[in-house]
Amino acid sequence: MGLITEYKCPGCGAPLSFDASSGQVTCEHCGNTYSVADIVSAQKQESTTEEFDWGNYKAGLSTEVLDNTVVYQCRSCGAILETDESTAATSCPYCDNNIVITDRVSAGLKPNAVVPFEIDKKELKEIVHNFYRGKKLLPKNYFNDSYIDRILGVYIPFWLYDCTVEGEVNFRGERVNRTETSRESIITTYDYLLQRNGEMSFTNVPVDASTKMNDDVMDSIEPYDFSKMVPFEGAYLAGFVADRFDSDPDQELPRVNRRVMNSALSGIESTVSEFSSLREHSNTLRLKNTRVKYVLLPAYIINCEYGGQKYQYAVNGQTGKIVGELPSSKALARGYFFKAFAIALAVFIALFQFLG
Image (tube, rainbow, N blue to C red):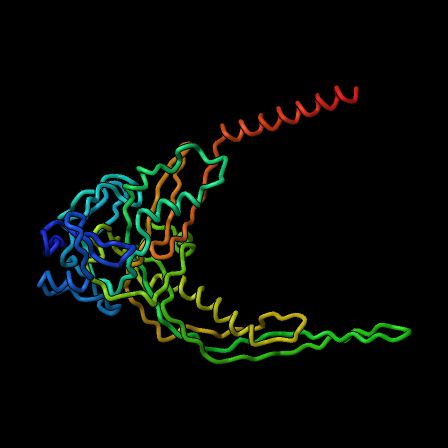
C-alpha cells in the first residue's frame, strides 16, 4: 500500500485535522494550530509519488498510493477513498455503508493540486437548515443534526482542462426595414451572410473524474474559485477523505467539447448585433492544444432515504452551494389539504347561515 503515516501534533503527539474555517491544521487535544507547510516539513519525509501526467496515464496506471495516507474501500459501491490514518472514517460518503481498509488499490497517482475545504461542520448545518427551512411538506426529522455531524467531507477527483477553440462560424442575419406612406406600408428584408473566425483560450474547465457521482449534480455545485487552488499535500486530507479518479480523461473530452463550444459560440455571437434575427449557418470550430490536470475539489455528500427512495445532496465545500431534490411527505400533504378544506367549509357554513 505504500508508506502510511499519521499527521501528529509536534507539540503533544495527538492526531491533527485540517480546519476548513481557518485553513490551518489543528490539534483538538492541546489547541495548537499549524500551517500545512509546517506540518509537511515536520514530517521530514520526502514524497516519491509523481504528480499526474496525461501521457504517463495513457501509458499505464500507477499502483502506488500517496505517502502519508491510508486507503479504504467500500464493500457496497466499491468506492476507493484515501485519508490520513487519524480520520475516523466509518462510512462511505456515497452510500453510507461501512468502509474497510484494503491492502491493494490501483490508480494512486498524486493530484497536481487541491482546493481546500472552507466550509466546516458548523457552517454545513446552517447551510442545510437554510436549504429546507420553510419547506412545510418535508418529512419530519428528514435532516438530523446528529447525522450531519457524522457526514464526511470528501475531496472529489476532477479533471481540469486547458484548451483552445479555433475556427470559423458563419451566421445568417436578417435586418428588417419598414417604410410607411399614406397609401401603403413597405417592408424590406435584407439577408446577410456574416463570417467570424479566430480562436479563444479556456483554462480550468472542470469535469468530475468519478463515475460514482452524478455529472449533473457535480456541474450544479460549480463554480469553484480556482485562484485558491494550491499544490497537493496529504495534510489537507486530515479529517476528510479523498475519492480516486476512475474515468479516462480522453473519454471525458466530449463533455469538455460541449462546454467550451457553447461558451465559444455565445462569445462569437455577442460580436454580431443590429440584426432582427440571427441563426447559425455553418461551423468549423475545433479543439486544439488540450492539456489536463488532476485535482481534488471539496464537497460534502449527504445521503437520505424516504418512502423507499434514496436522495443524495452535494454541498460545495468551498462556497457552500447545495443542490438536491427534496421529497414531500404525503401524510403532511393530506393533513394540509384537509385542514384547508375544513377552514373553507367552516367559512362556507358561516356565510350560508349569515345570508340565511
